Amino acid sequence: MRLRFYSLLVVTLFTTSTFAQVIKEEAITIGTKLTIHSNTLNENRNILVYKPSDFDASKKYQVIYLFDAEYLFTSTVGIVKALVNSRKIPPSIIVGVETTIRVRDYLPPIDGDPKNNHQLWIKNKFPQFGGTKNFSKFLESELFPYIEDAYQVLPNRTMIGYSNAGVFGLHTLVTSPNIFTNYLLISPAAWWGDNEIDENLATFSKAHNNFSGNLFLTVANEGRGMYSNALRIASKLEEVAPASFTWGFNQFENETHESTIYPSIYEGLVKLFDDLNFKVTDNHGKYASIIDIQNYYSSLSKRYKYEILIPEIVLSDLADGQFLNQRNSEAIETLKKFTVLYPKSSFSHSNLGSGYMRTKQFSFAKSHFEKALEIVKKKNITDHSVIDYLQDMVAAAESKI
Image (cartoon, rainbow, N blue to C red):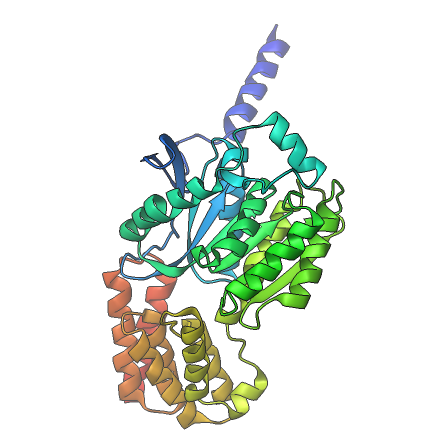
C-alpha cells in the first residue's frame, strides 16, 4: 500500500512539473471576410481581404486579386508574406474572391460549335457556363471600386487564376487586357481548341499592341490537353506578342495539377514584380548615381502609367555600394534623396545618420538619428532593440561633437 502511494506521488509531481499552464488563449486571424451583394450577378459574394501586419493607411499598396479564395487564401497569404519579408515583391494587399458557380464565371461562351471535347462536355454537363462578361462587369463596376475606395491601392492590379480561373484570365487577357496589369495563370484548363489559341492571341496582338502588362503562365506534369495547350500558347506568344508585353512560361515537371499551385504563386509573383525591384550590383556602386536610378523608375512610371517611387531598400543598397567604393559624396546625395522621398521613414533618417557618421559630420548624424527615433516612437513601435540602437547612435554622435 505504501509503495503504491509513493508511486502515485511521483507520477503527480512529474505531471505537474512537465505541463505548461495556459494563461491566455486567443484566435490568430490573417484577414477579414466581407459579404457584398452584386447587382450584376444577383447574388451575395464572399470577399477575403489580407492587409500587411504593418499596414499604413497613408501608403499605397500593390493589390493581388486571388480567385478560388476559399481554397487558396490562407496559403497565398503565407507565400506573399514570405516574399515581402525577403524583399522579392512589394508590400501587397490580397483580395480573395470566393467562388459560387465556377463554370459560369470562369468559362467564356463558345463561338459556334464546340471546338474540342472539353467544350462539348461542359456544354452538355453545365449549360450555365459562359458568364464571363457578367463576372468581368462585377469586378470592374462593383468589386474594384469598393476595394479602391476602402484601401490605398495602386492602379496596377495583379490576378492569380488557377485551372478554370486560369481560363478566365486567358480570356480576359485577349479580350480586355487592361482589367489587370499582371496575369499569373496556373495550369489553365484546356478550354480553347488549337485554332482558337492561334486566332485569339493573334487578335490580342493586333488589337492591344501597346499593352504593357505582364503574364506568367505555368503548367504541371499533366495531361488532358493542358500541357499541349500551354506549349501552344507559349509558342504563339513567341510569334505574335506585342513588344510592350512581357511574359514568361514554366513547366513544373515534378508537380501535379494540384501541387503546382504553390510553386507557381511563389515563382510567378517574383517574375511579375521583377522590374519593380531594381538589383543594385557592384558596378552600380562603382559608377551609378541616384539620377540613374531615378531615370529607371521614371521609365517604369511611364510604362505602367502611375508614379513608381524608388523602393527604400534600393536607395539604401545603392548608398552602401557607393560607400564601399569610396564615393562618399555620391552616397550622401543618395541618402539625402532617400529622406526627401520618404520623410516619414525612420529607415531613411537612420541611413542618412549612419552616412553622416561615416563622413564625420556628427551634428547632422545626431539630428537624423533623433528624427528616426521620433518617428519610431510616434508609430508606437515596441521593438526595444530598434529604440536602443537609435538611442545609442544619438549618444555616439553626441560624443563626437
